[in-house]
Amino acid sequence: MAGIIKPMCIVLITAVFAMAVAPRGEAAIGCGSVVSYLNPCLPYVTNKGPLGSCCSGVKGLYGAAQTTPDRQSVCTCLKSLAASYKDVDLNKAAGLPGQCGVNIPYKISPSTDCSKVN
Image (cartoon, rainbow, N blue to C red; front, side):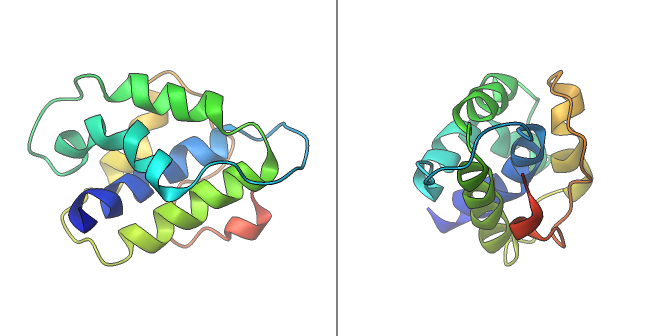
C-alpha cells in the first residue's frame, strides 16, 4: 500500500496547484482520497503502463480540492509519500496536468512549499 501512496503524492502535487482559486476552510481531502483518485496514474508515472484512465482521476481530484486547506492537504500528502518512493518518474508526474488538460499556474516539484499553495 505504501508503494502506491507515494507515487500518488507526486501526481497530486500537480492537481493541488491547479486548484488555485477557492475560499479558505477546513481540509476535507485526506491521503486516502488522494490515492484513490490517482491510483490509475501509478502505471504511467512508474513507466510500467500507459496513461489510461489517469486523467479521470486527476480531473476528479482537481474538482474535489475546492478550498485552500484541501489543496494544501493534498500537496502535503503527495510530498510525504513521494519523498521515499524512487520509482516515480518526476517529469511524467509533473506533466500530468498538461497531459490531462488541467491548467496549473505553479511549478510541480517535491520542493514546493505546500503552505504557500492557495
